[in-house]
Length: 168
Image (cartoon, rainbow, N blue to C red; front, side, top):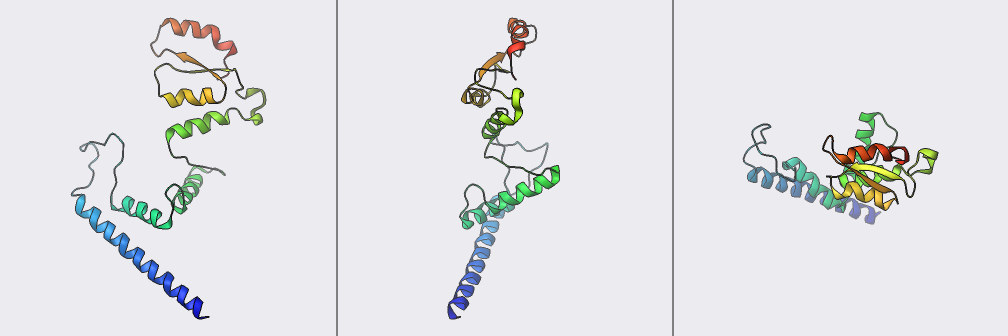
């Protein structure tokens, strides 16, 4: 019985310490950020991040939980987003590149039958794009067919000829 009391006391102390840490983080961030972000007036950083004390506190709290990738915050986000979208299953990934790989790989599912993208199938993609647009096509054994984004280009004419054998 005394071990249980000690562990409960330890848990209470850890929660108090966690609260102090998060309070200090809020105070620090509030002191560092002198004004709120003003849409239409303030520049958005290239990385696209605008972080306030709430976001920084959540990051510290996740780190205190021992989760540096996904964890209870991500599980809560996925659940809330699934409810919002009214879907049964939903998973998040760490980047747009990973999302593109997951999305393209799903096109190779045997559940799609004849509609599935298979090894050697041609897949149309833009000529001027990010490398991770092409990589999933190659990783899944398909052949990228680059579409010139300039209207009236010769490549658009040759594309018309390849469409019958193009899978996606």
